[in-house]
Image (cartoon, rainbow, N blue to C red; front, side, top):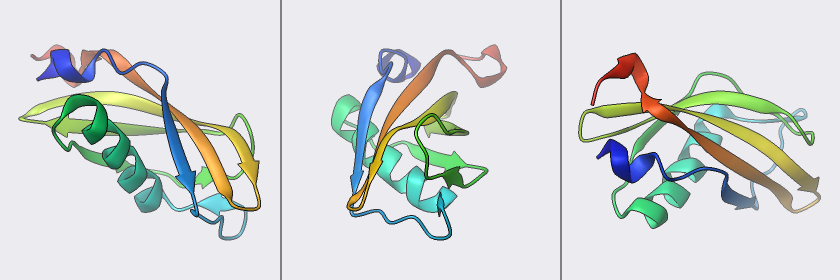
Length: 102
């Protein structure tokens, strides 16, 4: 399954309607949106977990993990634009599984 996650480099993640609370997007909301987009791309819904909230400003990043069928890869979510309706993000999936496993 890692081969299905790895090609997802710079996947646009549209989170319209996701509102910033106190200048941040909640980590669990970012993870949910990432799951939705990755599911559309690979045909299986990964379990995405983001440790930190994401600042609502262009260039802000947070690290997440995406797991499918026992394979876990790291991912970086980066804010590319913010407006009154929400934000747009890019998801950069790491090329190697976490821990180097397959």
